[in-house]
Length: 348
Image 1: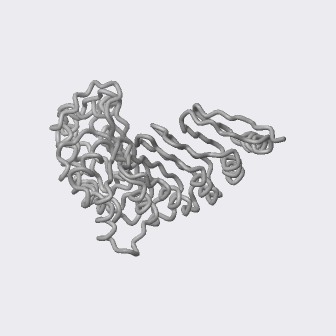
Image 2: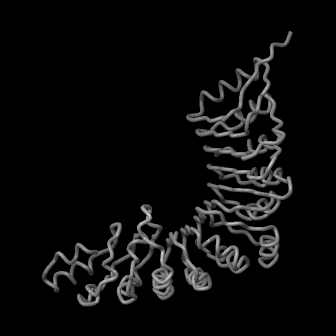
Image 3: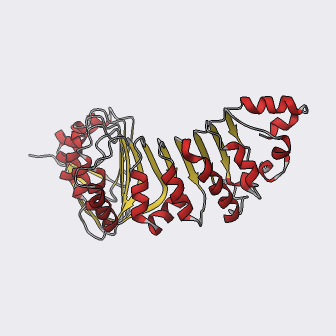
């Protein structure tokens, strides 16, 4: 945007502004805090994409954001200043929220990763982005899930075109929240448009299973689970029903996490699966035999990337099982087993 003001002739400057389709603000560019835009009477009738960082909002003036909220606007992408030079003042964010509240109706893409203290106002924005297709929420997602759990879920999952939904920070969804939401939506409710979901954190495997089972067309799924109950088998059962799944990442954060090898075998129904990551923060009893691991690997012929972080697990194999494991691993592009080791038993 600042480059426009290298054009000295105001008529030519307005002409070029009217042709702009994308605006990408440089780090620490604070032109939105000046009077230059208003003085130049710029308008952006073709603008469809704005990308900025928090540092671009320092002392932002409302009258400078208003011309950017055009009917043609489709994408707004803002995240924190990676260098930390922006103090993250709520006043600046509130000015942006007011502008988005007026101009967000045409958005199909929203990436918002800033601190926000006015969660009710952001909830109104979610209500108005009816045509949203791509939604990526940072800390504000965590705050909304805490302050308005039911309203938050309803505003997320009543979007008829939403395909991509991401929470880069922890967004905790309790069993009570999910069960109440599903009861309100009805027993036959599904969300078929969504193809990518990450990374909600659930308090039980049952909670996660109940929600993702309503999303039959998922292709990419990240889940974090920190349950009070050891009911993780439900996660594998529900996930195994997602026939289109290509990417699956599971993170289990509870203490002394127990895993049965038979649960992994459920995932062999995922014939399209290309990437699988399973991370356990504190391994308890991990029951995984050589036969189970071999059958798991052989049963996923499309697998390209595999990461099994199951702690200091020792998998006992007979030579035939180890050969089958090695043969399957040879067809996988990248593998990671953490501290897992294999021992081969020779049967007499």
